[in-house]
Amino acid sequence: MSELTLAAAQTIVSTALKHARDNNYNPIAIVVLDGRGSLKASAAEDNTSLMRWKVAFGKAWGAVAWGAGSKRIEKIAVERPHFMAAAAHLMDGGILPVGGGVLIRDKDKKIIGAVGISGDTSDNDEAAGAAGIRAAGHEADGG
Image (cartoon, rainbow, N blue to C red; front, side, top):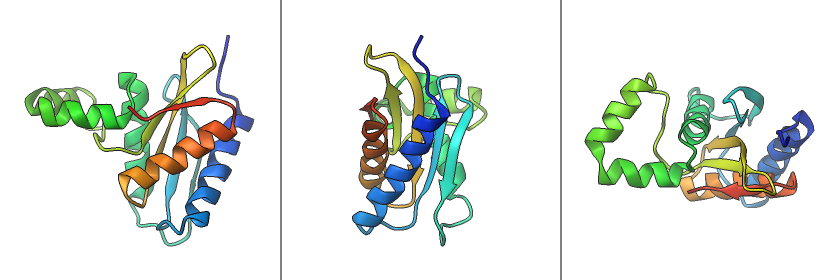
């Protein structure tokens, strides 16, 4: 059985933060959830705004709950806004349908968690998360 280890989650966080600094991103917050949606690791850089961690959590939680990267969820929100509004209501508003929520898949493509990042553009948030996931030896799936 494949699972997301604490060591892998910490590698994801540290590599994503390094990627953000190396590329001069705005300060980011990162949340790593396991396949059940439980918090495994997180961090917020100095000077992030108050709600960055919650936005990061919403991206990751939505991805793991739906089994789709948040770019895919964003596309659904645009194509079917009434459905997305109803789904967000069912999820107590916990889903955030914008890029930056990246599924973590094992070598067999099984979902073992998700990363959410917030602070820069959605594409940059996703790139930082994907860099961390790859550094931990897993596959990134942004949608």
